Length: 553
Image (cartoon, rainbow, N blue to C red; front, top):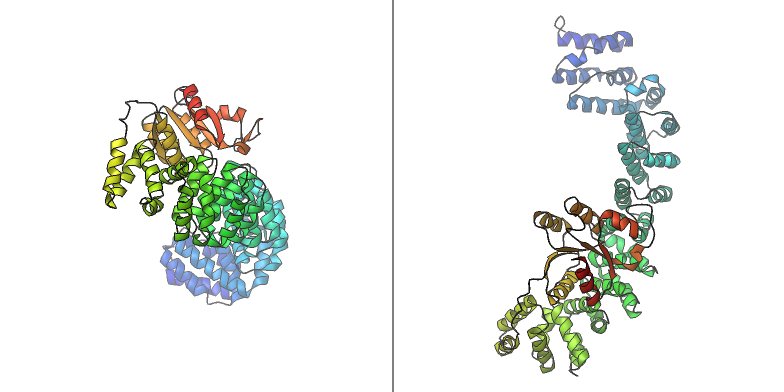
């Protein structure tokens, strides 16, 4: 290039192209990578003035040249897109040529221009070609053309060894959409964590009725991670998902109902209230379902339905009563307050349980509304002075004093027995439900232990690795990091003998034989392999929890 000026180079190239002398034009173009990017773009500009059908082959040849500047590459792509639009027959000929392996951007251009005539050719390449870059460009082009005829051929690459091709195939099916693509995506969820997560993301991007139905069905999956990713995705989709998710409340599987209720509660759309009320009206046998329903109602504006929530305060299971109390407090109304007064008025054991539940749940609005009622205040004083956790007592003492109820506060302080000096065990408790953490805090304190609570598993892992607790209690189903993943992280440093871990789950999550996959339901064999010391099923009573803690420590 030192023997020829840029201007002479461009003029000679323009002449060769105008004369359709592609042999000489290609010979000249070999020098293009040796000139600076600014003059490369100038060269493109000058030759682009030529007739479309004449310049198109030259531009295609330039794809083979080692051009490194991204600006030049983008300009070349734009020119080819423009010229190919005018000369689609030439583009098709290029797609058939042996040189295509060196001119892969042409495949993408065919997709961007929606050249439907190229679909059979590109589809054939999926079965004949093995180069990953070639296949990736082909899959992308077919997705841009929304080719329904190639869906199954593309879906095969979900099971391909190349991770990038898997990803390209998954998002291509999402781009194409339609019942067949959605069905094949859902059927490809088989316990491969990375692939499953990508598929759930893809289904979440489609967001049509069929995709939302498939996503909702995944709430019933036996795979822990699949359920958690699905929950997160449906929550992020929000109100649009509610009509489909509500339909899943017709499921008979208790786990599916719990996960569905969690999704609806987190989305917080009031259109879900009637369906959740129906669940409560029929009083499911499974306490976990009742708990999830009341927990969902706490997150929903249900003032008109609030009076029906009070019945949950008399549930036989403590966790359900506490969740109902939170829902009552969130939706407190004059009518509901009047109903609570009537329930407490007898001053019997049932009334005592209701008052204790409201206090332990942190139902501040209800407490403030009822504290001047003698029947309520008498029971409240007794509970706060006796069984209530010290933190709860401290909270309500401050609340009463701020409201001017100094005399009642003094009565509580006078009745409090001296704290026993019992160290107990330092127990880390990990659960994404703040209500469950309140329950553990109360139970473990009553047993003489020191609970440390975490609603984010990552923080629990960090704290445990920094300073070992005596025991860890963790829920199984949590977003981002589930109980299995948490256990695996802790086992990198601590053996089961040095740090026992109790996994809390529902009965239906547990199966008695090996499942065949580490991400499936918990079974005895995989439990030991993961490093879980013991599994407890919700709901459990205090005696069982205390006995299991004693056994492990």
